[in-house]
Length: 94
Image 1 (cartoon, rainbow, N blue to C red):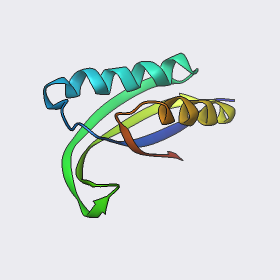
Image 2: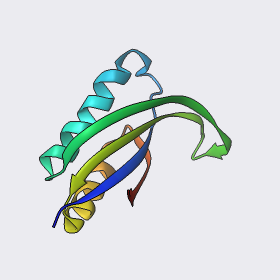
Image 3: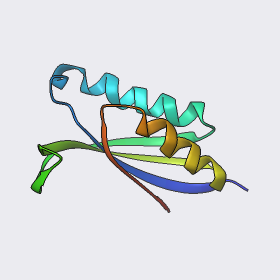
């Protein structure tokens, strides 16, 4: 049974500031290619971190609302780990 998830992904846009929309859409396509059904993408914008995380002072936050089977989440996480633009990712049930 599919469940509704929210994924918050922090993108490292260093050197890609002009291509943020393409990066966001690319992540959406990766979620769909692994079996998720996107419902909404909300760009939360650039925010500073409380401390430098892996030599990065800020990141572009994006919230993805989608439905997927529970076993699909691990596939999505694995695929996004290979994407160099993804700095952090977190998924939870809605």
